[in-house]
Length: 233
Image (cartoon, rainbow, N blue to C red; front, side, top):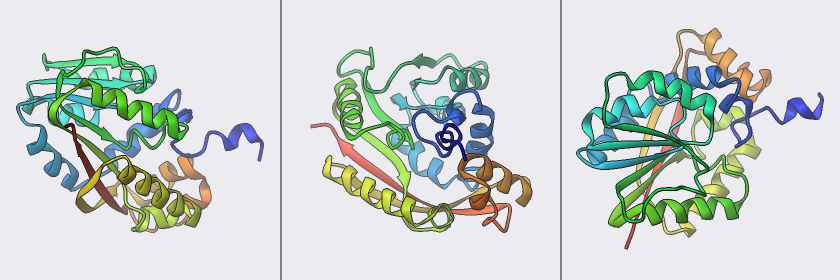
């Protein structure tokens, strides 16, 4: 397979599924956490507050969380994803979308009550850039505020079908998060649910290759998730 095509696989920072193929990511995002167990965990932690959603993507959580918060700032580097997110805002007046690199946030110091990042830190290329993104988000948070990272657990079917090398990468990444001062506050067993097995195979196959897609035997795909928290001192 040509190298150019290899670079399109997965959900790394420069993935085409965050850009011109954002429609595939939208289908993936819609199917994620079908029973809304992640939502039910995050909602009480952000209710009534001024929220920064780092890497808001196509806006799944804007639509779900914004009606319950004081103000919601959705930040993403992808213009393609923000166009989809914009359509979900509707009549909500408390939402602002910002196109920016998470390591270069042009927002005030000590401004937000809480920050959340749904699988947004791991795609950033390089450990130093990840660290800069964490520092930038921390700068915008008020003292005593929390930053929540929603990330994959290395266990579960989602990691298994993508291959042992990805499970190892996830384990190493989660260890790195803990070294940055985050702690696991919740472990969640949830699942993706697509309209059919064929659709599940198609979406996963597009993102990670047909071999991964062929391992899916149902319209549901098991997913284990960790919620990390770090409180700003």
